[in-house]
Amino acid sequence: MKIDVVLGLQWGDEGKGKIVDVLAGRYPAVARFQGGPNAGHSLQFEGKSFVVRSVPSGIFREGSTNIIGNGVVLDPVTFREECNNISRMGITPKDKIIISKKAHLILPTHKLLDAANEAAAGKGKIGSTLKGIGPTYTDKISRHGLRVGDILAPDFKDRFEKLKQRHIRQISDLNFDCDPEKGEQEWMEAIEFLKSFRLEDCEYFVNNWLEAKPMLAEGAQGSLLDVDYGSYPFVTSSSTTIGGVCTGLGVPPSRVGHVFGIFKAYCTRVGSGPFPTELFDETGEKIRQVGHEFGAVTGRPRRTGWLDLVALKYTAMLNGVTDLVMMKSDCLDDFETVKVCTGYKINGEVTDRVPFDTQAEIEPIYTEFKGWNTDLTGIREEKDLPAAFKDYIKFMEEFIGIPVKVISLGPDRNATIER
Ligand code: IMO
Ligand code: MG
Picture 1 (tube, rainbow, N blue to C red):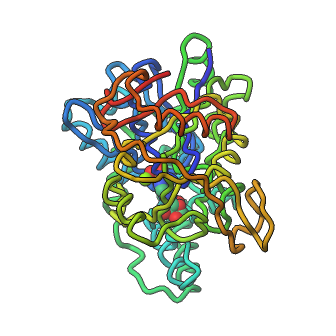
Picture 2: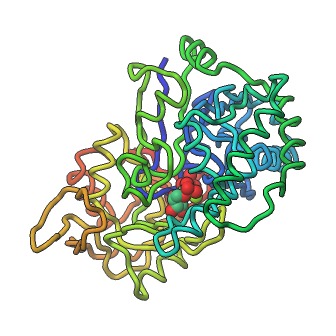
């Protein structure tokens, strides 16, 4: 069987949680392959809403298995908190979650280092979520990290102490003032909690599973935040694109099936970095308010702008997207005109490529559409969609060369049209 993939094609917050939750009914297992608690995936069903951070969005589906893969970085404290909240919904996380022993642990000092790095960067700061993501992946790549499986080793505390002391030296080099012991006791308690879970060599589990049953991989962040293809250095520290599925779960590329590429009908970005179609006017503010574009994790107001098809075509190419999934078009119901960016003008020249120098002065070239001025939220069938809206989608499909297979018209599970 195949592992199908859901991933974000923009700067995160595309609505991956909702789509994974919708699709999870068809996949008995959902796996996270990268990122960590910098993710905030919102789900809404039966009048309830929930935000998951490290736990896969399949958790609320009956009988589902949820895998936290080796490519993920795990903060035991956030994880325990999340599990406690899930337990209150009448679900027993321990019965439904399997964690890779090779996933790396976020230490309390990783978070301090994140803050220290950002403070030292001043105006050039990334706008990190300060969850310790960058420093944890740095330790992984530089071969200093601690992994989930290490918590079972007799010398775990010594290894923790050694890494902590290393971090303290780094923090001191950055002249950052903080208490390095802060949160340590809580962290150690959360490590004990983690020990009660199924910790496995997940690559065996995943490949065995795929012999008989399908699985869904749930991306976090978005392709434009990918450490290689995003607007470096204003990116996250993991491979958010398709290759991350293979390295983050231990599955060969031949196992990958459908790739669902999720995007919003407009763009948002949190944190710093280039954003060619960003709006600083009333329209941008209107999108923010109508779309409730405030961070699910940090509460920060998100930057907003028109849909960027140049960037979308690029990320669809990188991921080999088979099915486009369009989110939140209902948020544009009340606009006289709707714009999409179809080219960049850089130094007087027009291009349809994302340039190496993402800091370059980019002037977006727009194609304008007449707004559909119809309330889409109650529509459940393709035939009831207004003609202006259908034209808009057709244009997009032709530009990118990939069909829009799913249209989401509201946050609830049921507000979804499959084509
Ligand atoms: P989900 O999965 C949106 C952004 C941060 C910052 C940059 C680096 O909910 O879509 P990091 O903490 O990873 O070092 O921050 O990446 N960022 C996200 N933006 N959605 C996310 O996740 C994000 N995770 C990280 O705002 O600009
Ligand atoms: Mg988010």
